[in-house]
Image (cartoon, rainbow, N blue to C red):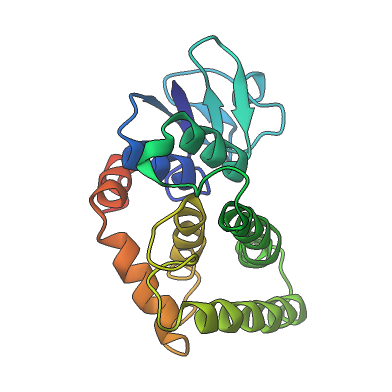
Length: 201
């Protein structure tokens, strides 16, 4: 398989999952400003949406969207435990978190990178984001991961989105459980491996 990624972007989610699973893969670095692939090529020819990630399967088919790719990969090696058993409420809790992170955290934090953001827009976005971070912090208080004691694909997504707070100078100290979660996940060997490969550490 081949993962098209941009360092530190949401493509880090499936990259972490690939490392957690120990599956073989290749990396293709994408410059999102020029929409070119390192070594040559127009990324729009790979993914007409123009953003990462894209996972190219061994048969040439391609899958996009971080959450969908993470779920697909976790299904390939269910014994790794990155997803609870099919049909269980715990499984749908992971889906619930993936949808929440995608719509309520990813988009809120992501818009803060927009160079055209106005002070008023930024203030409103930060206010909404703080409410959502407080909610997740409360959930994580007293437990290691979103679903309890076991790391899942949703935790890979939350970790990635929380990592964006550093370049945005968003202080996580008001949410100690969130900060502890970020540090805990950052220390996982698979996460270290993915971040090293992307030049993030």
